[in-house]
Image 1 (cartoon, each protein chain N blue to C red):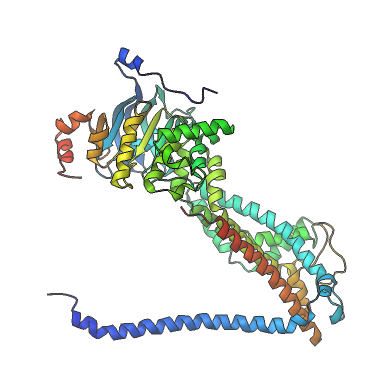
Image 2: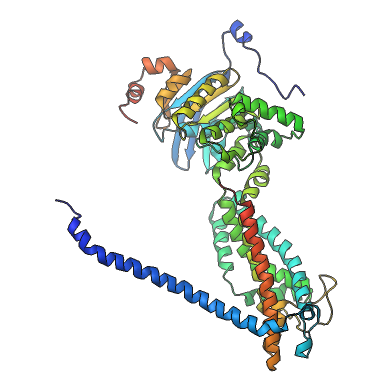
Amino acid sequence: MTTIVTKKPAKETASIQPQKKAVYETKQLNLWYGNNHALKNIDLEIMENEVTAIIGPSGCGKSTYIKTLNRMVELVTSVKTSGEILYRGRNIFDQDYGVEELRTRVGMVFQKPNPFPKSIYDNVAYGPRIHGIKNKKILDEIVEKSLRGAAIWDEVKDRLNENAYSISGGQQQRICIARALAIEPDVILMDEPTSALDPISTLKVEELVQELKKDYSIIIVTHNMQQAARISDKTAFFLNGEVVEFDHTDTIFSNPSDKRTEDYISGRFG
Amino acid sequence: MRYIEQQTVVKRMNGRLIANAIFKYIFLAATLLALLALVILLFRIVTQGAGNLSIDFLTNFASRFPDQAGIKAALVGSLWLMMVVAPTSIILGVGSAIYLEEYAKQNRITNFIRMNISNLAGVPSVVFGLLGLTIFVRAMALGNSILAAGFTMSLLILPVIIVASQEAIRAVPGELRDASYGMGATKWQTILKIILPAAIPGILTGSILALSRAIGETAPLIVIGVPVIIQFLPSGVMDTFTALPMQIYDWASRPQQEFQAVAAAGIIVLMAVLLFMNSIAVIIRNKFDKRY
């Protein structure tokens, strides 16, 4: 039963071998919504145990890109893709790579807190249950571990059977993060997770992201540049469906090499 | 130069307020008129029929003597009918709605189907009766049995159930679907655990209202040849039967004045059944109503 509560390999290995491994390698990715060429020749390498921020003006393709990483983009309309995205070395567009399998490894947190109209407990236990875990004791453990992981256990431990809509928006978003943690993912995708939250809740989620990167690789889309600067290790700047610049966050914000990046982060457009 | 002059606003204010008040009373009058018609109808039926209501009325078979006529065969027949109509129409209706909303691709053919289902809801019930006569009574040789009538009624209310279920399913926020798919749930798991629980109040309310329409329909039963006078209870779905509206129709069309009162008593029973079903719909809606 210990297999359920797995920890990722300890960080010592990382210090011996400073080279981090890539989680996602995007190679020459193109994506079309009908005739709209939304992503153009994207090349990005996303490293494990890092926070990668994706910034850019509205309509630049940043949300489309993050939704492509777990193939949620295919749910909306007819999309066409070319190129490949390797997740841990395997092309996610392969015919025999099931989306369900991929999404079990890659959790997602959405823009608007979207708990199910169920109890807090059932929300967090939803993922493990659909993957076949029925044992009540194991579920209890997963729920507690996930809620602790999302730093909300102390706030909700006495009201696990209350409807998830009875708590505040900021708490709901952390329940959604706990729900994503409960499937024990490898990567967590966050699509503007704080855009519907007040500043204090935003701060809590940001602190949480810092905490989570020890165990998970995080890709976060944000329209808030200060947020990207505060919490990310690397930043990719998207514009009109292309990656203009991708580098360490410090470099992007202090010494960008592209004029357009500089204009955007200094607030000259977008 | 200002475009909105405060003085003109004040000058016109009176007219605007009068129009405001007039329309309020027009709408109030419309509501009261409809209500009044309903009250008169109910009053007439209750005063006419109440005298005939008794335990005997519920437990007697039809008779040519007004004072011995009872509604037993029709009441039991209507219940049998519902036992065929409810499962058939709800399973088919909700199934089609799930397919159309969750599985079907958006293209010309599915749009055409969607549009025509709404149109079907407006087809007169006598047409469905003819369809039932051709397919179930004759081609499938079910005769004028409960099964044949039940299938015909199911077809009649199917479009209503499909449309109501589609709307209930569509009202489930897309974010809930995203959350479920995002955790690796399959489409069926998402439908079963997220979409249906959220849509069930709407689906059940629509279904029960459709069923109460089926229990009050007469035309299809007349077309498929359901008899009126029956002196036994059906023992299975292949037996013939009669239903409440048929019985009422028969009594109301008899020449003797006394049978008018018997018909009124039958209407009271039918309305009690309808009221009962509608209140179940209301209870379900209130009980399961969840906010997002």
